[in-house]
Amino acid sequence: MSHSLRERVLALAALPPSAWGAAGLAAFEELVAGLEAGDLRPSEEGDEGWFGHAWIKAGLVLGVRLGRVIEAEAGPLRFLEIDTLQPRSLPASAGPLVRPGVHVGRGAVLRARAFLDLGARVGPEAEVGPGAWIGACVHVGRRAHVGAGAKLVADLEPVAALSPVVADDAWIGAGALVEGPVVLDRRAVVAPGVVVSPALPVFDLVRRERLRPVPGGPLRFPEGAVVVRAVRRSAHPYAERTGLSLEALVVAGYREVEESAEEALLRLSAT
Image (cartoon, rainbow, N blue to C red):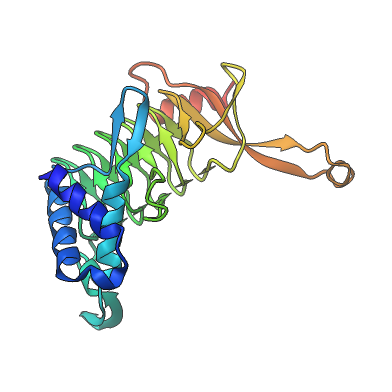
C-alpha cells in the first residue's frame, strides 16, 4: 500500500490545491488509516540515524488544506474546527485530545488533557503526562516518558524537516520544551523545564566537545545523555559590563545502566 500511496501523494503535492479534489481527500484518509494502524511511520531509524518521510507530511498537508472550517460543539463549548482534523476525543472531556493519524502502542498511557497532533506516534508502554503536547509527526519511543506539561513542538511544513524524536526509554521532564529537528537517543534525559533546540549551543562536559546539528539534519543527543540548562559567558563588551550571560545546554553526564532518569539527575547535580 505505502508505495502506491506515496506515489499518489507526491503526484498530488506537485499540483495546485485546486486540482486535488476527491483524490486528495482519499489519499489523506488512506494515509491517516495507515498511520493509526501503525503500518506507516512518519520517521524511522536507519543505518545513518533517524530520518523523516517527507511524503507522509506532504500527505497530511493535503488534509489540512482540503478541510472546511466548521462549527463544533463539546458540551457547553462551541468552537471552530477543520472538518478533516476533528479530534478523536472531545476537548470538553478530561481525557487526551488526539488528532487523526495518531498511533498509540499497546500499554501506552495518555494522561488527562494531553494533546497529540496529526501523525504523532507513541510507542508501547510509553507515558505522556497530563497537559503534555506532542506535535505533528513526533515520535515517542517504547517506554519513553514525557512529563506533565512538556511540549514536543513540530510543524508539518517544511515537509522535509524531521519532527522531534524521543527514542526508546528516553525521559523528558515536566515543563521541558523540545522543538525542531532534535533526536534524543535511547535512555537520554532532559531535565524539567529545559528548552532543547538546534538554535541553542550544546556542550558535552564528558566528551569535551560541542554538539552540532548534522548538516541538513537534526541535532542528536547521544544514548544516555543527561541534558540540563546552563549559561555561558558572553565576550561582547556590553555583556561584560552588564554581567549578562547567554543560555546554553550541557550534557552533564551519562545515565548508567539500570539507572532511572531521576537517579541520574540527582547524581549529576551533586557533582
